[in-house]
Length: 187
Figure 1 (tube, rainbow, N blue to C red):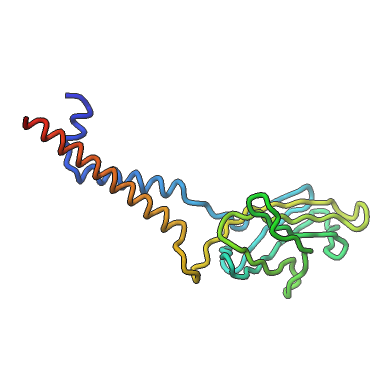
Figure 2 (figure 1 turned 30 degrees about the vertical axis):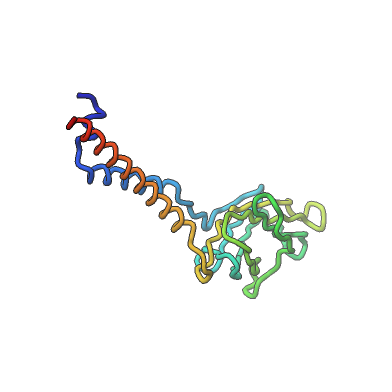
């Protein structure tokens, strides 16, 4: 007997278990990873970006950002900087605005992302006076989740349902092949 015929002699529940394990493994491997509190550095300037609430910005919902910026030379000053924050999605610039201090006196403000997906958040700065501090560019890739208050399914739900349908089709094909092989053996 070859390996293929041994494979089809196993009970169908074993096939279902194998397929379920394969689908779960693929789902875990393809899940997006979080990027909260990533330190970015450009020369003497380094910063950590934080979004409130819980580093989980949602689409169509204002999110407060805080940029904890440090200049190892201690020469950086927001007042002496032509500093901007640019938001890009799929290579297209969605908005550009000047960096500002929030109510706590830290670089920050509010961003509303139009839709779920991956956004590039870019902080750029150059000094008003030459050599006051080093010009910098800090780029962050920020995943934006689908707003749970909206009436649409999440991408995880859609992926899970797709995986379930594919699993069911595979199980149905295995059952059909097994049934046909048993019918052929009876003749």
